Length: 239
Length: 252
Ligand SMILES: Nc1ncnc2c1ncn2[C@@H]1O[C@H](COP(=O)(O)OP(=O)(O)OP(=O)(O)O)[C@@H](O)[C@H]1O
Ligand SMILES: [Mg+2]
Image (cartoon, rainbow over all chains, first blue to last red):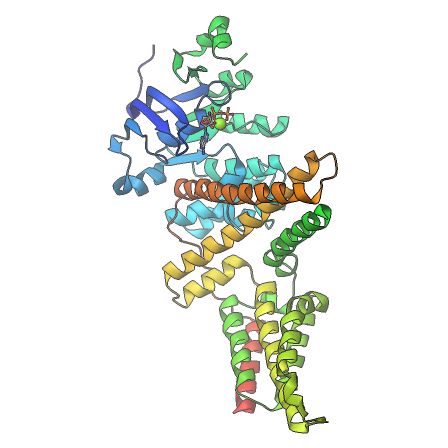
């Protein structure tokens, strides 16, 4: 195996229970290295989205510990983590909250203190890439499902964060947009962790595959060759 | 019956969503839209203050005429403005109308009083409506920020705005989803239970969605920072500043 970069996320035996008692993530340990492209694969409800929220430091595990860039998740590191980690939620309705698409795109740059000229140019560049320029003045909640998805992905990709989490980035989008998203992920040099259950996109966005099974345990973790092992895929419920 | 109730809840949720989203009028190329919000908002508020400092109905009528002029030059359909102010204006008139009568006779003074009072309310409501109809929410916020309104207050305003949208779009979705899956007509007794269930579901959904949106605002940075544009100064701004001075001079 090639020499890996630094370990930037270390999760040790983490579990997460939602307030209603559902244990969405159970005793998972995982390490992510700098510059890695990781795909998290697994059936519906196995905890991929929850795991993303945990690994990005947005939720705190009910058991276990996570270190991101060697730092604990908590108030004292919140700003540092938010500056370096981008997350695109599975459901754009949860992700978008500004009055217009333009403000959606300019929101995080303003929080980061980027100057206006740079920010608006960046926003326009990505709007062009995703063909959403015409939607600039529209409120996000009046967009189609795929358009919302494009806006949320553009919001995060344009900032080129050190670590980017994508939760089902290609669900609900047309072929052209899907190609665009995959292309942008491929050229990015940051660490990208994608949750999906679409096997065919995995080779394009990842060189490491983590498979979570129905029992919410990691049942395989390794290179793309895992995808050739049909028995693993079947037991993971992905095919 | 259930159709009527659901239909009106659906219309109401759409109505409120539209009430708050004014992009149809905000992005028109009209006079007030061109005016820098940092001049527009104080200007419109000064009209309100002027209107409550006088009982001279001629002055009040001139103010109202000026507001109508602004409405037209801002390419706003007067019907839209009217739909936003008529209810409260009428309500005010009804409240003060007893003043009109002295016994069975109409008192001239009472009539003037009732009319000027109603005019004031119409002027105030129109001014505020015109601000809302011609200024994007983010411009309103950045103007308030410019005038040093505390961040804590602004953040409450921003959150309220977000959640109002959220609340009504969630309500709308629940109603449409129910509609799409209801096959037979319901009886009134069933409406009672299913309506209650829907209402409970609605609150849970709004609550949980707001939690997830909170997570999203954490992910995307929640320091309530925003871009401010440089102040414009063109013929539009000059026109309003001159008008402002003339009005003050005339009123005092
Ligand atoms: N807010 C919540 N409250 C309670 N339970 C939840 C909540 N969100 C998710 N769950 C439960 O946690 C488990 C994991 O959910 P999660 O959304 O992480 O799955 P997922 O792998 O992303 O699924 P999918 O492929 O459908 O997106 C599921 O069993 C789900 O029912
Ligand atoms: Mg998910």
